[in-house]
Image: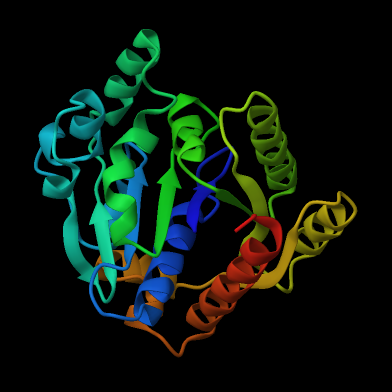
Length: 261
């Protein structure tokens, strides 16, 4: 599975979801090290920081690999940042590199090109995307075969989930990607909040692949970011960690159902 985790705006738990999915998949990987590749395709480099990784410079990151087609992708990969997980970090220069490549017509297939020599080494790839539906996100989706989007109890985030669905379908029609939307997941769930229930109710009537698992609002998630370990590793028996584990199972089941083998 090559999964792009997307949202139409930031602050919805996208990166936490990507980090914890990668960690769960990695912990289950047979054969030990390196069976899951986490790819930070967001210039804010939050996915790398979730695992305690910060690129030293452009050449040490996805940005450098996009800029130089001759660069060795394996040299930029950080190995075993968590059990079974390797990571390709971002760098703050990624946005500028993306703009330059887009002007040259090289961004759409750029991330796909970078990942191509790495794919045989991994069972799964999890890509954290830019918190919008711009060119960097499209490049990540073009490299994926599956997309997961995240919403919260904010009523506007239901519209965001619909926008991601439309974005994926548009680019499938243009043949920019073959990726399927395999799930719409609720993050920062406040079970006592009326708004949260209303948002879920609105999405239930859309036909989007709404996943049953709700990731609860929890102080453990920001704490895990400070600890530089996803919450499924730092507090594996907590309700939020168990929810991320259940979400991983749902995503895999939906992927098996929706994506041709």
